[in-house]
Image (cartoon, rainbow, N blue to C red; front, side):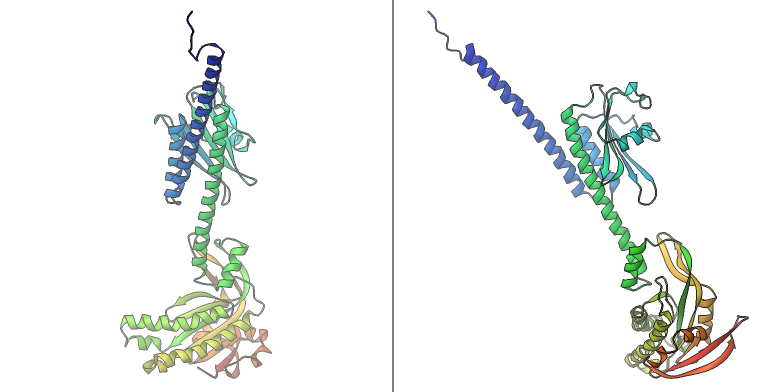
Length: 417
């Protein structure tokens, strides 16, 4: 009698086969999971290794990885940007370069269905779909939702009509979450860039506190608004003649030094630097942020600027000792706002109030401040508490150059100048 010892036959052999089969299935699952983790790792590393500003390249690499590793015929990231008006962006990639998924999808009503779907949107046979019959195979669309906001969809295609297995839908849902996080980070990054750009622009005109208030209220936009504000013009008297004796480099150095003394005083008194015109400073008080004490801050700034002017002359010495400063201050209604274009904004004020302030400055004598009656009416008691006032004179009613109406004018002579 022959005895068989083959362990693969009989009851024991059957059990071995079952164990082997289970082991191979588990191994296949692990390999599948490891493969998916490798894809996710590549997607994340791809984002981290590329410049965040190059969105086109980032999303191309993301879609390439999905097509390569998951046997897709194409992949599309459809993105909606609603923060600055409705904008659509398509990042599309196809295994077959002759197929343009972007053109196939653009403008279709089904896009809205994909974006607003609560669950993955699956079409097993695109040939039977009313709007997508021009595409062969199957499609899976996963809505992209950040918080409560729908921001687009991840749309994937396969050539066959067998659809997408549950495991693949689960994996692509994880990929979808990665895309949402990447988009959210990109938004944060570009918003910070935009904010820094605005801060850089606004810091040319406003103090840090004013810049903060402007950005808290809204993003700066083109346009103007009616305001009541105080305008100050300060000009160096005698500098034009002096500059003829200096080299161009010296002229620039002296002016920069002069402005370094003057501009911080404007900001310290809640003022706005409107512009520098040669050796002249134009400042605004009461715009863009309303200031009930705009006239007080303007006159106070003017008096403090004369103190700083005295220090400036002491530092530079020599021929600069002969320089004088003239100022004009007026209060009234004007138009204030941003001019230019959205990427190159200049804040300025225009109107008769501004023109009158400039005329007052041109009429003032050396080391004098000419203020209008409107300014004095706003600060009658404050004048007694202000420092650096030697005297105040009522010059009566005067007709300004180029103006038909008359204006009450007062002259302030600073003690230190």
